[in-house]
Each structure stands twice: as structure tokens, then as C-alpha cells.
Amino acid sequence: MQFYSNIPYTLKKSRKRRKTISLQIGDKSELIITAPYFTPISEINRFVQEKQNWIHKAIQKHKEELIKSKAKEYIPGERFYYLGESFPLEAFFEQNEREGLFFWDNHFYLNAPDVPAKKREYFIRWYKRKAKEYFTARVDFYSREFNLRAKSVRITSAEKRWGSCSEKDNLSFSFRLIMAPPAVIDYVVVHELMHIKEKSHSSRFWQLMESAMPQYKLHRRWFKENNHKFVL
Image (cartoon, rainbow, N blue to C red; front, top):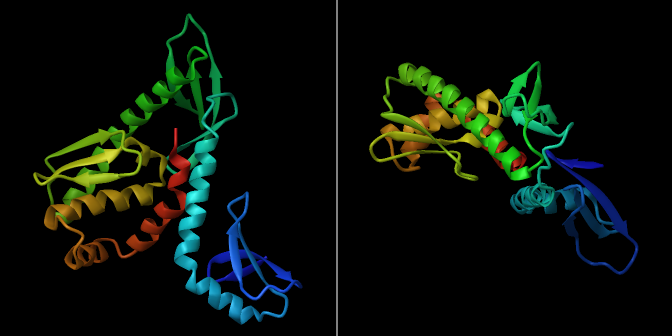
């Protein structure tokens, strides 16, 4: 395993009459580089540097496709994310007990008939309820911190848009965001609150973000590398 910057890759050197360096994404979303046998490592690293934007996008797309190809089954032992950590599921059906999803002692407990659509519905309901509570509290906290006021907080089912701020300063957040780590959630909350001051993603907006949250770029990158995890 080789490394360039923060990009790990497997290098395969070919003794055939290959004249160019090529790259591909492997079955486990790993980067594989094939190069002529006597190619210097410095030249290979330069090639990786030139292609790093494509590499990040290709790996991300591959991860998303892997997740989508393996739909959630809602079976015992399957893991689901909440506030950045994954927890195992205990699934069962007790007709005499209240149906629904519960979280206790670092486990999800799902009492529901063996119908995937119904089980998924219970997860969404639970996530939305927790998201409303948590995001409202964080918006209140940062509103006081930055002397800004959002008119409302709404929870959506958006799959790729984590948050938004309307022209009238109403904030919306995807319930899926509750699966992310608290620091990443705070980044989205602050991001949308800054839109109360500046609606577009202008240079002024990013200056506001830099002032409010100097580490925001790390959180933004986290989304690019991890949003494939939050598919139900």
C-alpha cells in the first residue's frame, strides 16, 4: 500500500509494453494504479495529485453504489447510525406490545411485522422525532451565540440536501442529518444560520463561515466522504 497525501493506493507495476499510468476503483472502493515497471514513484504521485479530484469523486460514487446495491434488511445485528455512531438492531414482533422503534442501552429495538416498508417507516418516524428535538436545540444555541433568529425549524426527507434557509429565514434540515456526528450537525446548523445574513454562497458567506466556525472545511469534507452511510 502506497500513500500520496491522504490518498492510499495499491500500485501494480506492469512488465508489458505499457506506456501510460492508469487508475481504477476496486471492489472495496480502493484506488488501484497500474504503471510501467520502471516508472518512478515521484511520477506516480504527481499523476495522483493531478487526478485527486476525480479520485475523490470516483471513490465516493463507488461507495454510494455499494450501499444502494445492498438495501437495508432491518434484521437483527444490522447497524444503524445515530449522532455519528452505529448501533446494532434487535428486530422482533410481539403483537401484545406497542409497535415501533426504541433506542436503549446503545441498541435499537424494533417491534414490527416482517414487512421491510413498515420497518423503514418506523425508523424514519424515530429519526424525524429525534432530529426535530436535537436540531431545534442546536439552532437555539447558535442563534444566541451569533445573535441571529430563524423563524422556524422544519424536518424534511431530503436525501442529498442536508439543510436550507428560505428567503424568510425558515430553516429546513433532512432527518438523515441526525445520523451524522454532533460536530458535523453543528456545521450544517451554523451554515444555514449564516444564510440569514447572506443568502448566496458568495465570498462574503464563506468569510462569515470562517469567522463563525474556522474548522468548517473539515466538516464539509466529511460529508463528501461519508454521506453514503446514511441511506435507509
